[in-house]
Image (cartoon, one colour):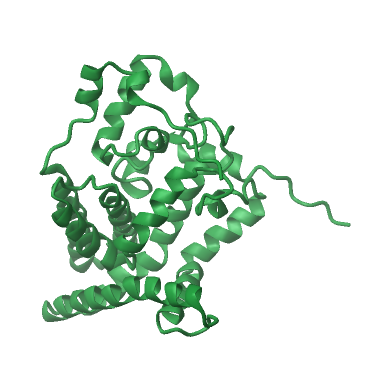
Length: 317
């Protein structure tokens, strides 16, 4: 069972350089979680004030819902706060639960992805292996995301598993049911609390239009775009600088597609314990040393989608 090749930071940097790049603090993680919620609340307030801005708020909130998943991901690496209990509290209850995820289930799954990145044992390989696809196939995927079909299918299966329905008896079935319950029950509790708060403020409809709708549409799309950009059609599954991709995002892409430095995915796989807020610093240091020339880097998400949808359409018989 081969594991993915690793890079030692001290093979690329001096000890002093690496200490500067990897420096953490105890307030940045909580500040990012607070920022994520502040953007959601501001976008909700904007749409409540001017309902014609609802489409803009749906996009902004959907991107922050991905942001919660990104910050949960940092918590899985113990990178949100040096106190592991507080780290896990932030990651689970303020990031994972509201969007239907579970930190305790995600952590071992994700660390396995790092251990076997782009190898046959990688649990995320199913997300990148089908690419490239045709433009028609990608278009259909995007339509399913934006019309809520992807969300409905995922949540239906998750809820059925949580209640032991639709899966065969046995140990694996019990594990699947437990994993689903770890996500479903906190999701229901946190979302009922959100609905109650908005109802108390006289805006019950905002939960459905300004939280559930973004979660079912834009968040699904940007999650797919992130997955495609990170590992689809990478040039070398065995090179630790080329089995994950960094996408140089514009400020607009950072706002509505790739928040919290998630676009620096090659750097994340090279140095998986770096907090997200240090990935841009690492990229700059690598560029100054000329190392980025050896890495898989693309400029903008459209260029990545062009490669991922480059499979020719089948010729009619």
